[in-house]
Length: 285
Ligand SMILES: C[S@@+](CC[C@H](N)C(=O)[O-])C[C@H]1O[C@@H](n2cnc3c(N)ncnc32)[C@H](O)[C@@H]1O
Image 1 (cartoon, rainbow, N blue to C red):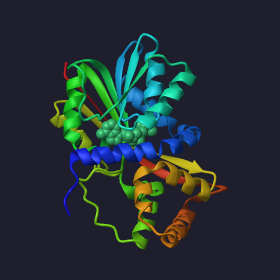
Image 2 (image 1 turned 180 degrees about the horizontal axis):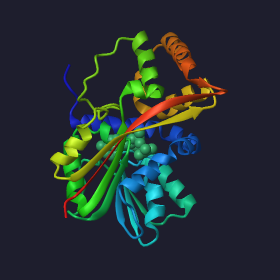
Image 3 (image 1 turned 60 degrees about the vertical axis):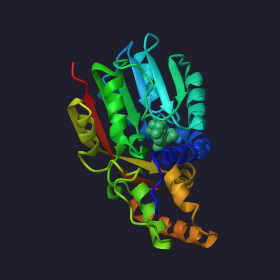
Image 4 (image 1 turned 90 degrees about the vertical axis):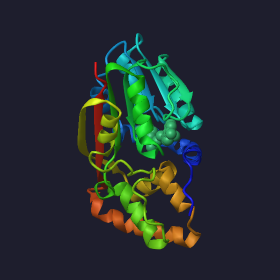
């Protein structure tokens, strides 16, 4: 089978994330309550301070860009880039509701940053870089766009067995339809799960003081239904796989997911462990 080109992958990503933008808006409050600590961690790792000019890559509905904008304050600014115009539209409504005039939205591919060299004090990115067909190219662009001494801080998913809320749905689908063996170098949720992968690429790009940590936490849901519905409405890669199923197969997958969730019941909620790879590095002075 011929491999899709980088341009085809990027166009696919744009369509996928535009399709789930409504789901992200619907679940925004829930998602924010569950994952806000990651935004704070990224803001800290990128050393954001009042007055800084910041670039947030693949911000989707505004994470961590909006916290970044609050942190740098009115004397600072955040430029947000994402492929999916509809995700950006949600982020724009949220920025307006929060009264944040210091955020600018740009639709585009983060692999090609059309900014002068040395123009940002910091770069942040949450759950985007693993979807890029050319991550080293993006790393080089980040290194170019950062001012000397500026930090980049990124979060990507660690391994599927440490992230059962994502991994178990993929396992359920695999039990019902045959999927091609995963190509570890293909863009996808777990593309940067391996320790050292992203850190090595940033180092290759000339960044120094590279820090990497697998950050363990958990998120929880009120019910299996809440988990299943939010997953289907937000997780574009899972939605893509589910689209391949007949109505019967879909029922079977839902049944398998419901069973697989049982071990994670805690009291009257479902609590999943999560493992996020946090990577930060800075440009030499
Ligand atoms: C899982 S969402 C994460 C959004 C947000 N940062 C968050 O943590 O909630 C991934 C986002 O990356 C964006 N994305 C994927 N590939 C991209 C690319 N090449 N350039 C820009 N954005 C991209 C998608 O459009 C999507 O909004």
